[in-house]
Length: 285
Ligand code: SIN
Image (cartoon, rainbow, N blue to C red; front, side, top):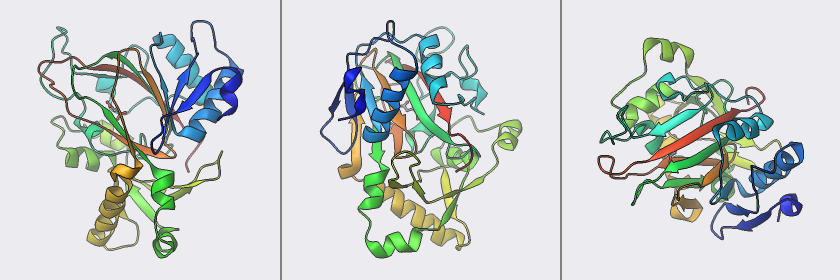
């Protein structure tokens, strides 16, 4: 149980990762002590679920800012009114469902911002409108996925580096709208360690997802196979929690120790609108 106990209740979800946080009212609670308790809880549980809460855009920006600088996403077509707000919405300008997922790139396993020189740390997603069925988010525990590898594999991959590329993963995801030249130039491929150590907990994790393309210094096909095998291992059911959204849920996760993906829903009939902020790490890993 985390040290947030004095400020709120933390109840583990009972699966491979995640906890429900109760007793927080963002209309009455804010400030560094609340932030510190939330940070401790999200490091320990990797995903925090807050149910039935009011969480305005400015509260989301404020709380996110305690964790660090909010990422201004290179895919600027998703920007909300604040440049750090990323809107995941299947509604057109007329407010009617457009019949396709707003961001097919979110439907493949990924770690937010692993493609960026300064990657994502904590992401917050707040549910404004939720489909009747589907539209869940799956989360994988990358600490547990690393720890479950045999010693020989751990030794083999310990110092490997993987090239991450948003443009490449977006193409592979089959997104209809591909990145513009300007967006590609702003997000060139970057190398990241395959195994990383969480700076707060000291635990190791696999740092992967589909933004990872190939292993640096290894023949491309062989490296791609390794990336595919490790992604498949990390997304086995034993490491995964599926979040079934309710309106007014806030879900917060630590990208240093998780990967996630959005799942299908009836995009022509149902409305799904989520407001996201991703906070950047302090610097490159
Ligand atoms: C995301 O990838 O950040 C969004 C996930 C979702 O829409 O469920």
